[in-house]
Image (cartoon, helix red, strand yellow):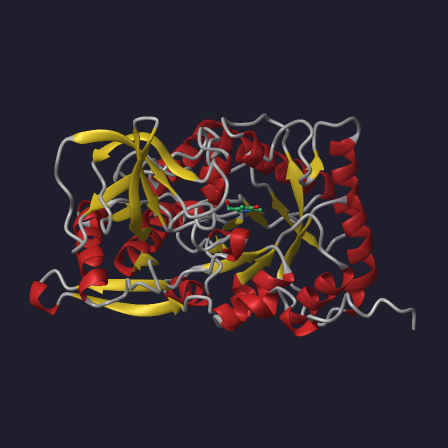
Length: 454
Ligand SMILES: *Cc1c(COP(=O)(O)O)cnc(C)c1O
């Protein structure tokens, strides 16, 4: 089953918030911290493996590669790697993180619509699988492939152009998406088949139909399109040249409750129903899930610095805002987040629900995590927990107002021994003021004064 972990997750979260206060993680100087539930992450990794094992013919090669952009944190990549999950990277930076986490090249996949010649050459030299995004990128690979000693698997990303989901910004299979080779454009399909015939080293096909907001059925349809294309290519070349299908990620996350739905097994079963040939052992598989592996396991805990009212509306001014929940602040209708109220000691706060705004610290009016949200009335010194923020939230901070990137702590609880309590491990230290100055040009403070020509 895919979601055993969820029954305990809210309990573990409450324990962790309380322990964060008791163990002094939250201080005056550090009024916001980010927590990661290690047991939850492990359970999601295990659920992903089990879901695909249940539908895949034994002996099939399956690489689950975590989409690093969802949580670009080295200890997280290493934890996932220990749980048998590789990395999908889309920049030199993400590749460096995967390498720092010790993820093997053979368990790393490079995607991105804008790979430079240097990135392509490095990937080939290291033996990292690459999915080319365009005809021009393939032309670059043409020049590099004969000299690459390691010979990693290479593929082409295609866009089945089957339409988008409810969040346009994350829909990658629309008619005019910037990603991949647009398969339904005139002549494109024939071009793809010819391209594979001319390049025997192209052995993979890749698609990623979208992320949050794309219905499961549409994702499965995208995978079916890529499977059918592989069959067509292999029939045209007369042998099994395409031997691996990379089906991307995109499983949506439930941001409305603690239920983990849909599950990896629901998606795997839907794929097995929609594309039966996918799992019969003729194709190796790569997946690239991000949000669905991490989102439910992250919590931002922030102190309410002030409580005030404005126009009769109660407002809790906290230290969690746009720097941690960028998408929610800029697109609140698409990215609502749950918020839980705790008292100053980290105990769940009770009381009648009062509609109130939960605001962040940044200097613009829309820096709100929730508007008119019914919660027990928050007071100065209370805590708010911003839930389901383990993917694409605190891991992807935004430098507005030079707000420091907060520290990230993994936590484990001992259910059999509550006395031993919660243990924290540092995943990322909070950014220091010196680091903020340094990354803001601090070493070049005179640079613009010296404007004489040289
Ligand atoms: C972002 C991305 C993913 C991961 O998407 P999730 O919705 O986080 O699962 C996978 N593959 C590619 C190519 C991506 O761009």
